[in-house]
Each structure stands twice: as structure tokens, then as C-alpha cells.
Length: 166
Image (cartoon, rainbow, N blue to C red; front, top):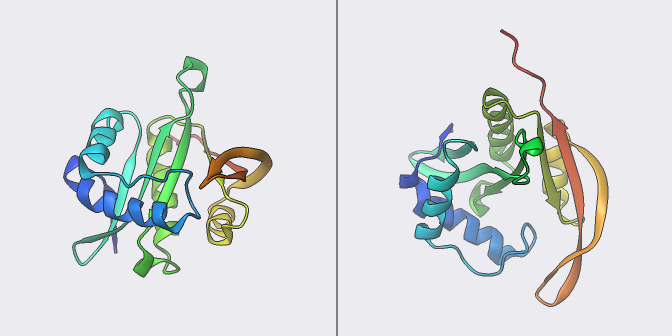
């Protein structure tokens, strides 16, 4: 497996993996599949300031992780909201760990000091991944949003990133 920086050329493969997560209804409030064009647009908009990575096995993208702005306010420039998605056939094989660890390193290089995310409480795999990667659970947002007409809670996680040493 290789973890590398994502490029706009990866948009179709990223959309495929992301759409599996949307279909599974355990990782996102999104309900509409993403097109390659939408993913490419997101990558082009963020790629210079917010890291995006893919994991490949035998030339096939099997997972991705990326960071979105936490807030548009300048005081939060170094806080990133991260997401990680793994293709169904590659889950439970260490792909998520490799992506999140590499994403943290890439974010540190870009002067981020914190990564945050929100996870459905019943998503035991994502919660375990975050714990293994040094995140702590800092609270729960009750009735954060609706998914398929039902209110869902989310667990908030964060990881402080140590500054790079010269």
C-alpha cells in the first residue's frame, strides 16, 4: 500500500470510495452521491492549503483522507476538520491508520495545530481508529443533524499536533 498526496486526477476514485460511505449511512450526514466533478472541484479549491491524501494498493485507490477548513475566521486557520473513508473491501486492514497518521504529518507541515472531526456514536470502527491515532473524545453534540429523517448525535474528537522541530 502507498499513501500519497491526492490530485484532481484521483477525483473519480475518491468519489467511488466516498459514495460507499454515503450509502452505508454510518459515516456522514450526506445522502446524495458525489460526482467526480464535485470531488475534483473540492480538491482544486482546497489542495494548496488543506492536505488531501489517497491510499493505493496495486494502483487502485482504496481510501482517502482530507482536511476541510474548520471555520473561515482567521483565528482558526490552523484547525482542520478531517474526514477519512476506506473502500468496503479494504476496511479493517490498517488503511485508515496509515492515512490518518500521514494526514496529521502533512497538516503539521502546513502549520496546522489541531485536527477535529465528528463521528456517529455507533461508528465503533471510526472511534477506535481515532483513539489509536491519538485523538480524544471531547464531547457529544446531541441532535446535531438529521439523517434520513431521524435526529443523530455525533461524538466530537480532536488531536493537537505537535509543532515540527527544526
